[in-house]
Picture 1 (cartoon, rainbow, N blue to C red):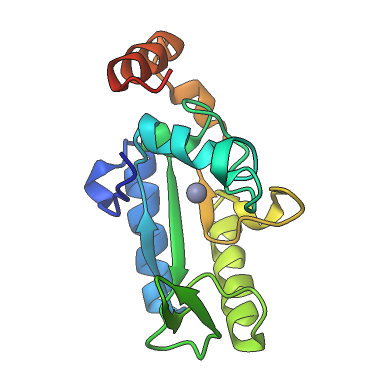
Picture 2 (tube, rainbow, N blue to C red; picture 1 turned 120 degrees about the vertical axis):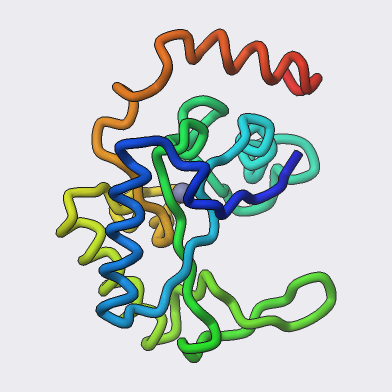
Length: 171
Ligand SMILES: [Zn+2]
């Protein structure tokens, strides 16, 4: 269960409207990013948690600080945008035996400029930018989330996490 959902419709109000307005402004300002991930299944969070921590992914770079239920993505209250590699001259990365443009490039000067512009717009709209986070020593440049998103989680969210992961056999 590691599918990525990039559907804006999968976001929950009031964040859905905020995300739409953000994307409109990014488009208007010609900041070349596009939505990559919106709502994230609890099972996918459980999978991402293992990077840099457990099993055969223990030695890889950490991908998240959030256990299942502790990411705003799980509740449709976060959005990740990546670089539009058709526009931004990014570095290449290895992927399944090929070299592909790296939509997460954080080194190339042109890419860095886009991330800064993106983070500026996110923060000016009163949203929280992952560029200020620290995940294993690295920022989470694509990430933006609603401030105080935890207040918008269902009251019984812990039970919901247990129920879903138990059903998936991942708990
Ligand atoms: Zn994110």
